[in-house]
Length: 296
Image 1 (tube, rainbow, N blue to C red):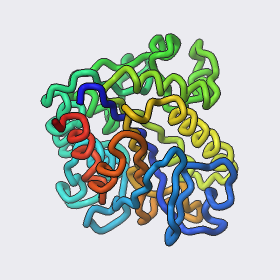
Image 2 (cartoon, rainbow, N blue to C red):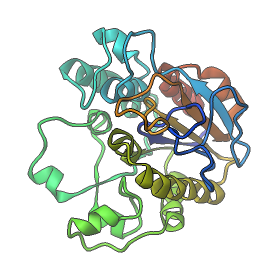
Image 3 (tube, rainbow, N blue to C red):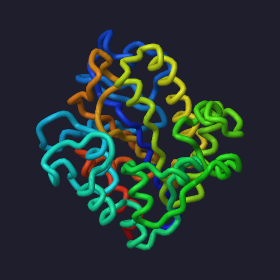
């Protein structure tokens, strides 16, 4: 199994909603593979399999980012472990779970060494490290992995969460803008060079909280183009791509809150049927990846 690869493409705040004016994905052209609706058969280009995935995890209340992302990145039911859904950044209990069960650490312990977090960090993060860190940052640190920096991005070895680099340029970084297609080429190259790659995108969640329909209609087609180019460039006979989310949000702009909707998990490429059959809730993502990369 040494020649197989997995890319986990995480999108914050993307649920399977109902059709209607509250949902910016309804009727949006060029939204494949992001637009999925309740009570409809979901399809995805490039022979993807769409699995409606439980993000509530048996815990009352609205799913939240810190606990949902901890669950995705560890295989541990984080809301059940702490008795609630935790928003924002992981608290100490969630950090402890990540430090023990990070997907990167699990893969290392099973002998999978070529692993990476594709996202770029700016020097500001290291110079003025925030008090609270994201679940992804904690997962990377748990395995002692190197963080990508702007220099890596400029050399074509990393992507920013805003894959167009617009936000980096606005911050004064000396980088070139990227089209969705250029960014897709970069991420495809990264994924082809590593056994496991994680990429995180969270502008969708920010748009959902802002209830900004114009931003949603501008941003979602760009994100969809990025994903389609990525899939076109990858060798899907060797690579599995798993796209998932931590909770719903952008699919219902009638409220600022996260939704109770299931989230789409879409599996493309190698062993997609086998992996899709394993996934029912966010708890199943990490075990499915570890098994795919370590099974004899």
